[in-house]
Length: 166
Image (tube, rainbow, N blue to C red; front, top):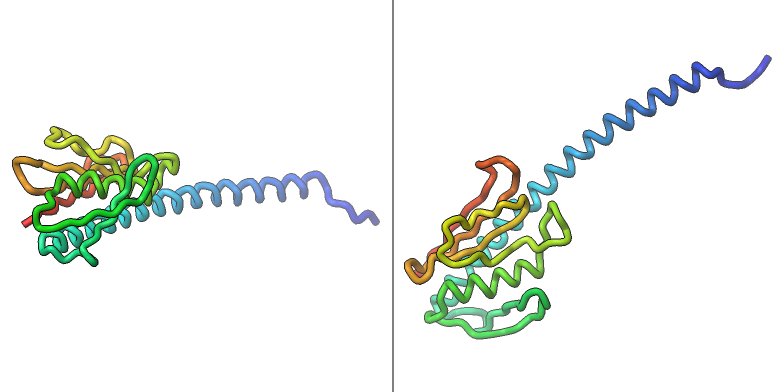
């Protein structure tokens, strides 16, 4: 009596492995997409909280030891400056857009930064690229910073926050 597998048994095993692999690949792809969306939304919330906190501290003249860190881009060199109640939102837009361009990457394309400083008083500061954040100001008309992040391909898949300097 022979102890070998038949051709049909081998083909059945290969077919089962192929089906399991196909199901696993599609499921894994869904998990990756959800992780990218979650990372993009979390980065947006972090940037908004940071802006709000620093703008408030500076307007009160209470930054930590009077020093605020900022970054140059694309060199990503750390610098330090002082802020006070006279520091305006245009300064925050540039300094912190660079900070988050250096520190966070686009979850959908790791070769590009997450945050971009967008031209002031632009008609459309909404990002066109998924996973990207645009930071803009309405200066000199208003003392506000607008932060918009595109987290999906749909028209409603954009997070937007506006922070005012009092």
